[in-house]
Image 1 (cartoon, rainbow, N blue to C red):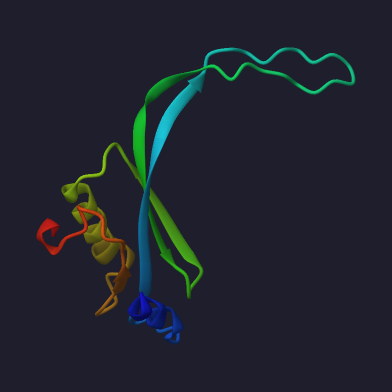
Image 2 (cartoon, rainbow, N blue to C red; image 1 turned 45 degrees about the vertical axis):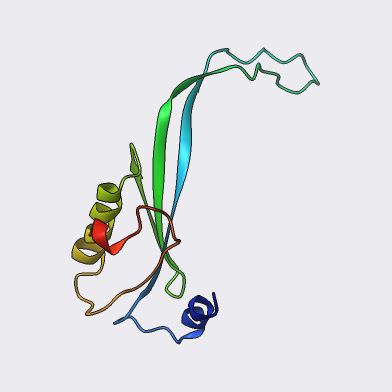
Amino acid sequence: MEETLDLYCLPYDPKIPLICRDEQPTQLITETQQSLVPEPGKAERYDYEYERKGTAVNFMFTEPLAGKRKVSVRERRTAKDWADEIKKLGDEDYPHVPKIRLVVDKLNTHKIASL
């Protein structure tokens, strides 16, 4: 933890960006009911019933010292999906830098073997 916090204290260097990466699963839903027409002076009401439409995973990359962020949405979270996102990060988002400092959690797909 201390090593990670030390990274955040380094001065900003655009040649060696500090990129933080996280992901979040999301449930995709759709409303099944229309909202009720409100009576004058009353708040809008609606039924909380919904229909599940699957799931997705949001991959978030942030460069906090530069104020940048990028979200990529995928159908699933596999080691290959993670590797593809890291490849895009280097090849498309930061092709001009010699080194990227990448901060990730210890999820089972975040392994060097995935790359």
